[in-house]
Amino acid sequence: MPASFPFSAIVGQDEMKQAILIAAVDATLGGVLVFGDRGTGKSTAVRALAALLPKMTAVVGCRYGCDPASRVGACSDCAALEGRGKPKTHQVPVPVVDLPLGATEDRVVGALDLERALSQGIKAFEPGLLARANRGFLYIDEVNLLEDHLVDLLIDVAASGENVVEREGLSVRHPARFVLVGSGNPEEGELRPQLLDRFGLSVEVKTPTDLPTRVEVVKRRDAYERDPHAFVGHWHKEDAKLAKRIAAARTRLPEVSVSDAILERGATLCMALGTDGLRGELTLMRAARALAALDGAKAVTDQHLRRMAPSALRHRLRRNPLDDAGSTVRVERALAEMFGA
Image (cartoon, rainbow, N blue to C red; front, side, top):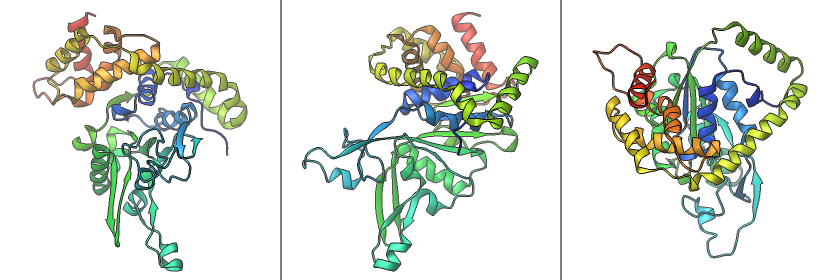
């Protein structure tokens, strides 16, 4: 099976690529929502992310990929190892798990292992997609079409970082901390506000309108489909550079400073836009800090704040009946008033 389309080969869609890279640097942001026209590279960009992620250290034999360096949020088996010396570890790829629209609740949360129950008479838990996505990324294409009961389930797990299964005589709790990435077409329905609020960043993508960009997209896609291995090999160096940037940014992130002046400007911007709650400025600060780390900067600047504001705030605005401008326009207008054109 050929590798996915290289992230570096994606033409345009700079805001979407930036948001995905930011989520890869700081998993606490809450994920990325990509809304826009069909055929604009939304799912391609998300699936290309897997090749950029540095491998993670996990406990050998753990079904949830627990971090051996942290007992906080560990599964019951890994927590029981404390005090028994260092567990065996290995390097594994960061999981990027697809959640299909037609998935059953059992497949998502996990259920009784029927094979072991019937053959051995043992009540054992068979982990689901949420278990596989722990410490990684959970991707939902057409997230706005997801069934309501799965939306409710995701909201609970995303808030707690833990999946609780109580059924068929089973009582299981396991870690389920993941970055939620969703894509969709707004023409097919809106996202429920409760789930929308769980996404840290929101990106709008549109079909390119200039001729050179459209031609280049077609050329690259055609080259990939004709000879995937050669195309991936051609872009390998660029993807490797991006992977190194992400790894360096993760290391640099705790050292990036955010001044009180930057925090005040972020809060002032959110107040001017009337965002609900304080999650907006918290996400804006974290996203700007991750961008600074990605850029190799030691401190967050106004430029970092300005570049991340649309993605961090556009989905948190209240509808204003007296202003028919879109949320992106309102954010850009507020930025222009604060920082100048």
